[in-house]
Image 1: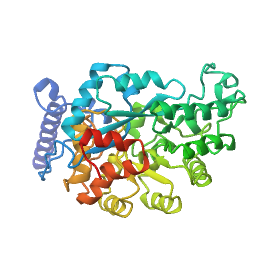
Image 2: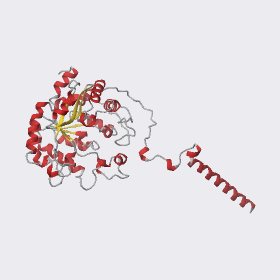
Image 3: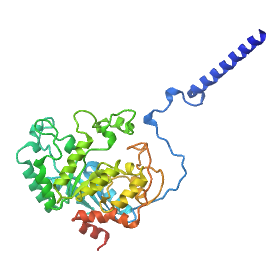
Length: 401
C-alpha cells in the first residue's frame, strides 16, 4: 500500500514538473524562451530561407545584347523621367539594347512617344493599345467607344496613322475578354468577328499583335487550401477570375486561338508564354498548329523555372518562336534572375527580389541554354518578327548582318 501511494505521489510530482516546464516553454515570451502558439507566424509571415549550399552564378548582365519585348514604362514609371533615364542606364549595365514599351494609346501616341524618346537616344520603342471605353462612362457600356458606330473603322485608320509615327505593334490587355463589355452588359468575345478588320490591318501593316489572354491556372480556381497560389490571391483577391461572371480559362484561350487561325497573315505574340507556361505540352501543340504565333515569357520564369528539364527541352525545340520579355522595368536584382534562368544551371534560386516570393512560394532552376539559342531568344527572333527594330538595334549595338 505504501509503495503504491509512493508511486502515485512520484508520478503526480513528475507530471506537475512536466506541466511547469511546458508552461514555461509555451509562455516563452515572458521567460526569454520560444514564443507561444498565439505568437507563431501566420502563412503571411512564412518566408523560409533555404539551407541548401549550392553553386550560385554571379551574372551581372546578359551574354548577348537583348531586346526586351515586354515592358511598361507608362504604367510603372507614371511619367517619372528621372526614373526612366535611370533605367536606361541600367539597360546599358545589363546589356539590354532595346526595351519595347506596350503603353502608348492608339490615337494619342504622341504623349508616350515623347516620354520614352526624350534624352534616351531612342533606346525605347513602343506598341499601342486600343482604348475600348474611350470617353464613355465606366458603369454604362452603352456609352463606350467600342459600342459606337465606326469604332472599328476609326481604329483601322488610327493604326495606319500610328505606323507613320513610329508605333511598331499593337497590345491587347487581358481586359479584352474579361472586362470589356457590349452595350447590353455582356462581355465582348475575343473572337467577335466585328474586330476582324483590326487583326487583318495589323497583318497588312506588319504590326505584330501581343495579346495577354487569361492568366495562370490558379487565378481561375477557388481561393482555398488546394490552390497553390492561395497566399498570393489572398493578398490580391481582385486577381481571381473564378466563378460566375467570367468565362473559363479554356474558353478565353480557345477564342484567342480562333483569332490566330482566322488571320494567318498577322503575327501574334502570346504574352506570358501565351499564359500556358504550366502546360508546355499543350503550348507546343499550339505552336505546331499556328505558324503565325510567337510567345514571350515576361513574368513567367517563376513557372518555367520550377520545371527546368521540361522547359529546357521546350526552349530547344521551339527556339525560333520564343522572344525575351520581363514585364519591367524591374530592379537589377530581378534582371539577374532572368540571366541566371536562361544561362546557368543554378539550382533553387529566387525569381524575384521580393520576399517572400510573390508569384508562388517556390524557387527556380536554370536551364543553361547554348549560345546559339540564347542569341535567338535574346535578339534574333525579335528582329525577325518586328521589322522596325532592325535599325534601332544596329544603331545601338553597332551590329550588322
